[in-house]
Length: 127
Image 1: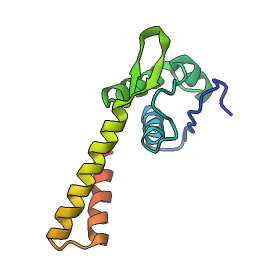
Image 2 (image 1 turned 45 degrees about the horizontal axis):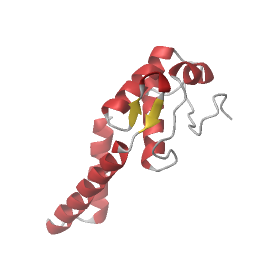
Image 3 (image 1 turned 90 degrees about the vertical axis):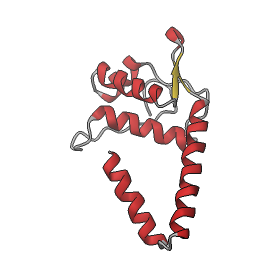
Image 4 (image 1 turned 30 degrees about the vertical axis):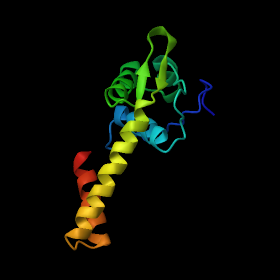
């Protein structure tokens, strides 16, 4: 259980090549996208999360900034950082793009396995 009383669950893998800020950002983003974190959920303060994870405050702050730039969270000044309703529209946009990709791949005769390999490769490149 985390010490900040939030439903946010994050595990930092210190042996990973992925930087800690990206691990935090990615795990929170996934929890928002899969609805583990509902719209309006208050995230822990930057200081509380940093202390709990044993990482620098600036690392968590960078993660939160990137989440805000992506529209997944919003900072309400001293009131804190909350899961944004805009995250829902971002999810819907990705779902529309996925449907369009699937339709295009099918129309071009690209099979399911090949289409999935292409998506996986694109996701790997995006990291």
